[in-house]
Length: 93
Image 1: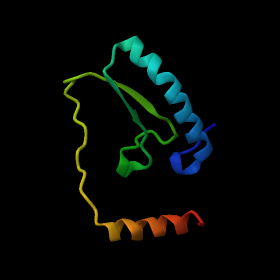
Image 2: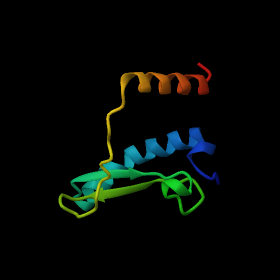
Image 3: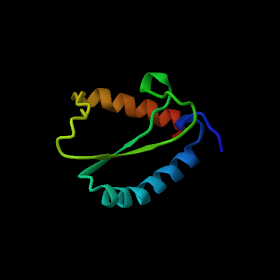
Image 4: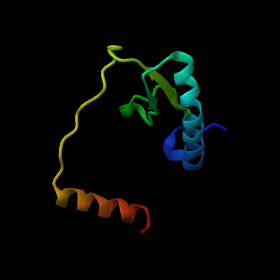
């Protein structure tokens, strides 16, 4: 079934994540990986280059040289509360 990305197919995305969770331990054991990234991009600004929904399982190794983004910053409680309210409204709740 072709869909463009995560936005178009929440049920398929849930099924894909369930399959990723099933496959990840087998892939880890087959490759001797120390960790695993699950990667999915939706739309070009997020890095989507192939415009059909898919996920990647990336076996990771200690000191493999692949950077992990670390752009975390702390938000104020009021800002988080306001964002949560907008998200709840968008979900119809």
